[in-house]
Length: 75
Image (cartoon, rainbow, N blue to C red; front, side, top):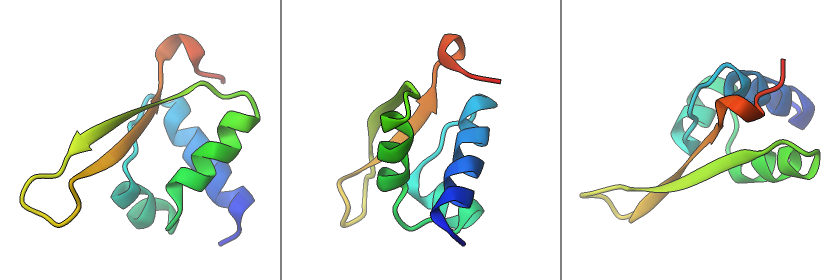
């Protein structure tokens, strides 16, 4: 799957009010590099928020969760 398709699908989900984690992106969009897609979207002017979430009991200490606030969503 190419970057543009992943990017547009991720943006559509964010604009619907969904919150996306890297595991969500891998499962739903076949995207291994969610952070890179978010970076690309931010460079295009999208106001995407991020919060680090604790990941207890695993090797990874935390993961990122991304969303767009309601006031910043585009139709």
